[in-house]
Amino acid sequence: MLSRCLLPNIRCRSASTLFLSRCHYSQNASPNHDIIEMLKSNREEEDKKAVRNAYKVRAFDAAIRAIASLDTPVRTVAEVKQLKGVGPGISKRIGVFLHGTHYCESPQCDISPEKAREEALKQELKVLQTVPGVGERTARQLFDAGCTTVADMSKPSYFSILSSAQQIGLRFAAHLSQPVTCDEAETVANFVRENIPSRFEVHLAGS
Image (cartoon, rainbow, N blue to C red; front, top):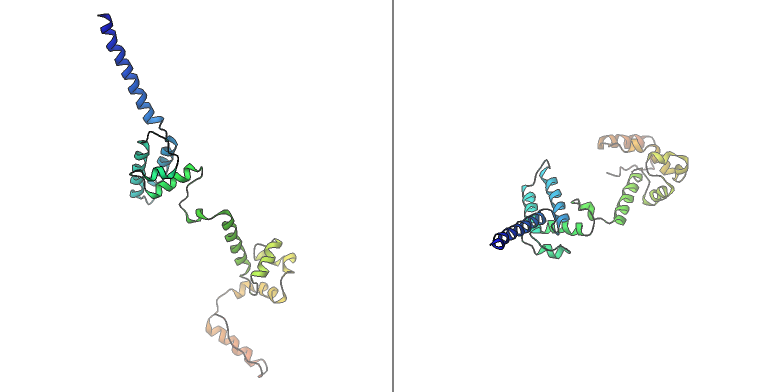
């Protein structure tokens, strides 16, 4: 009689303990806890944006539910691509996360460090080439010498690299960068024609 009374109590306590253990596991010890937290963080960022994308928020919710339902840890992107509720965009985020890097939506994030340096160099050279008469070759010489701005070009160490024509171009760079109307250009051309020997011809060029 005593054993019959105690046995149900023992079973009940065991079932209760097992139930609590399962609840705790599903909430805090998911095998993909880190991935879920990452997706939750991404969802929160999207939800707080000034222009909120409701579709993305719902996509994050669906993906979080899908990942949370797994009993085994995600090892590869291929595994999540097979899950209903996980689209290509979120699969990419998870893939980046699994590789230990940070996901970035900007197109510039796909550029390799070497390519980024090349693009930065091109922009630096373009700045130097805004001076009339300075081409890519001279701009590269200036850059290699340490010159990175038009203002630097006036320094003696950089100014000496320029040819006589380029030095003149630098002195009047600000003036020459101002737009000129066709009427103004024609006025100057006529003035030159009137003050040089007739054997010379004057033609307007450029755009």
